Length: 238
Ligand code: OAD
Image 1 (cartoon, rainbow, N blue to C red):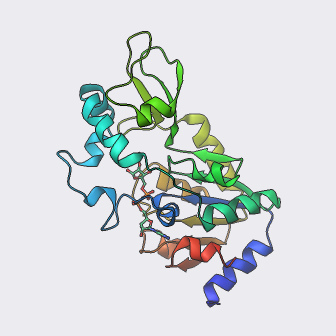
Image 2: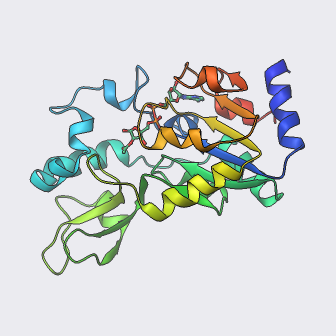
Image 3: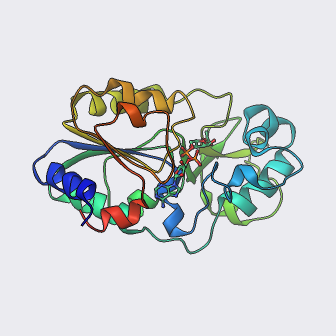
């Protein structure tokens, strides 16, 4: 086993206060493309850049085009948790992992069995009316045609944080508190380019910050351990 993976395994074995902070790279081995890799969502051609489509202004002005993108690109059939999701859920059951903080909207940590999942950017598995707030099952939003509407006439929207929208204060404060108190912080599958999410790492006060990411990130120099490998393969060994 690689020496850095062996070190991560040792840290995990010796801690009962691990927090995981992750992003789209955690789900690529489940078949969901990330955003910024060469074959990621942001490098595919659409009439508008995905950052524009995934914005509050665009959703409000062009819900038809938003929903075309949403159903074609955000909703992926038949995806299953991979070894990273499964091992994290197992570590929680063993009483070693306190929280999963994720930027992902795919619900795969919960599908793997994780309970304390702090979804910074929400979830496409929940929907609500943008006018009256009434909650709706996500089924029609994700699989129907056209723009889904509420009985009140409002547009039903996914419970995700679009660009220009603030993160949920309660989720952020729970994430900050978990990260601040963590003994081992494992950050993985995220380019750490999107704020305020990426800045949460700065709340960590310990000396066992592990970064597991295929490509280099702006936080590599700050980490105590850096592993540039596939996260599912790494979690399959720890
Ligand atoms: P990115 O696409 O920016 O970064 C994913 C990172 O995961 C990249 O650095 C890849 O190298 C790495 N990666 C891919 N597959 C991997 C694997 N199998 N193992 C390890 N690393 C792997 O995605 P995020 O950092 O999650 O926000 O992006 C953050 C936010 O940007 C998203 O939540 C989304 C997006 O705009 C909103 O929609 C609000």
